[in-house]
Length: 140
Image (cartoon, rainbow, N blue to C red):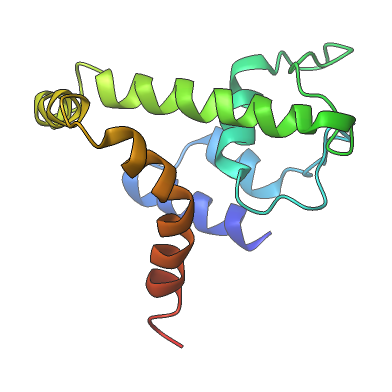
């Protein structure tokens, strides 16, 4: 509810107030029931949102996102999310609208030439949680 109010205030300030914005302010939000809804994943909301925006066609039934249920064997949803993260990230990085595109491509090419890149990539599984802990525990 609060997020919608903030969005409406932003739209009214950024644009001129319109009937559509007023309708948004007073609309009833319907939460869609989704078989693939997660209980144990609190980090991939952006990936789910982007996939939902790609695949939502209104009242189309069934809603075909391609997601499997979270509790399926072999972590298939986890693999799907990894693939989508990779796909979205590469599209963002390689977009002609990304002003840092050339710099990132040069850095990636330089990394690719490193003789120790395989060892470095294996160590990322250990380094990333440590860096996140440092980053997120700063204010505590």
